[in-house]
Image (cartoon, rainbow, N blue to C red; front, side, top):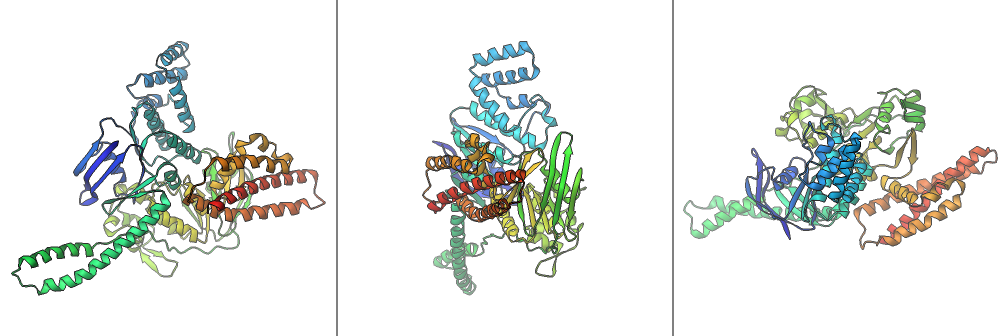
Amino acid sequence: MHYVSVEGLTKSYGITPLFKGISFNINEGDRIALIARNAVGKSTLLRILSGKEHPDAGTCKIHKDVHLVMFEQDPQFIETATVTQNLFNQDHPTMKAISNYEMAMESEDEDLITNSIMEMEENNAWDFESKVKTILTQLNIHHLEQPVSKLSGGQRKRVSLAKTLIQIGFEPKHVLLLMDEPTNHLDLNMIEWLENYLEQEKVTLLLVSHDRYFLEAVTDEIWELEREKLYSYKGDYENYLEKKAARIESEQASIDKAKNTFRKELEWMRKQPKARTTKSKSRQDNFYEVEAKAKQKIDDTNLQLDMKMTRLGGKIIEAKKVYKSYGDLVVLKGFDYTFSKGERIGIVGKNGVGKSTFLQILQGITEPDSGKINVGETIVFGHFSQEGLVYKKDMRVIEYLKTFAEQFPLASGGSLSAAQFLELFLFTPDKQYTYLSALSGGEKKRLQLLTILFKNPNFLILDEPTNDLDLPTLAVLEQFLLDYAGCVLLVSHDRYFMDKLVDHLFIFEGNGVIRDYPGNYTQFRILEKSKQSYASVSSDISSSKEVAVEATKPVVTATVVEKKPAEKMTYKEKLELENLNKSMPLLEDQKSVLTEKLNNPDLKYDEILALSEQLAKINLELEIAELRWLELSEKQ
């Protein structure tokens, strides 16, 4: 069944074309990812499909039986209404029953509760009410009687997402779900839950997202908007990269051939008399077609980051017995750590456990309650914060940059002017004279990154750097950070980004406890799920190393049996195998160090007990890692 049929769709803003003459169909069951650079029309295309914007030309037909549901980046609410009223703002008996029940439970009025229960039973709403509760709990939405106007930006996004998911359940059979960056402002657990939820729901999906693991989990086709055209690629993200590279190579060869023909035809044109025959007129028309082809440019220019870095001394940062609390909230409890050169550490933890406070303490912005943070004299912090671009008054991009400096140093020596540096960051001369307020979210992020790197930092603290960045910019930022010689401390909900960059994790477990895990996020989640599936053994792991290792074997084996190996390794699995090759030697090293310590005859009983517990945990992690490595190696 055709859900959507689009023919010759064209849209421009002023003289800037977003897309021109694109055509496509969306069929029942399609699950499509739409990707592109920032500000080339992804969100605009979704809004045209939803009827919220009109194209300049072309047709867009939605099947009469299809109900379209859209999740937007900038959600619209009834600001004076409560969260409940906004969530259930639908003219549907079941929806009204659930809304009345939720408000009655918030009010604790016995008569209202009794009446709302009767209404729920009359409309058979209990099953769906349970589903609604799951959605609200997983997205951490509470205090439903709070006015929407008092919510933070992240809370508004989660409420909007909950409303979208609730709406899907009430709609007719044929639902087309359009989603624009649904994972922004969600923590890692929420994203994983949303992946599973969308996989289970039988909806047709068109999704805009920069989260590559999320795309791989919920979609099976990639569309790319580029140079006013729409290109389609079946398969996963790795397949898209391979097919796109082949397409660009083919297009470049075609352009080179046209250039050779153009040079010959240009010479002929110059020699031709004014009076032309029918035959020469045909050749003349063909000349202009060849000329247009020869003058095409494949703009595959990527962001280049060749920044000079301040020299790192021998001392980086030492944290000694650091404590920090806010009332009953314990952020740090005796935190001890010495940072080394070139470390790349990911920070993982639920919202509200103190990750941002920890980053501020390291930089000296917030003072600890006790303990010391000794920062090396050569350390220069570069802090990429979630607050985004900060400016007191609106001004043009180049004017803003010149408030920092006129010249920018490069690693290769010499310097660049402000204008040249902006071009390096994909700000064209025209874009440099755009006002800050007119920049897209991704462009503001790019400019923010530029101003941070200007300081030549050797210790980068990146707090959600991937929000609003397009995939091409993300890929180059990743490569820059892989080559970066300084230290990197990374907070991100983008698992692909984190897996590719970090060597180990700081796990914020709450109540001031920070665990150092030697691996990336995917490996950590595999370990956690294995532990959860055999909780009775995990809770008693410290008593016996042998019991812990043996008890986990059936769990891991069961997982391997249930999951049918794919014929070809996915990109995510290849990356996981690569990271396992890095983390397993680290676990072996930790095991050797602990074993050596246990061989010390002068150890006290408490020390032996603590070291035995640590060794048991390391053995468990190593066992799970080895089994996963074997599974992936067989696929390879």
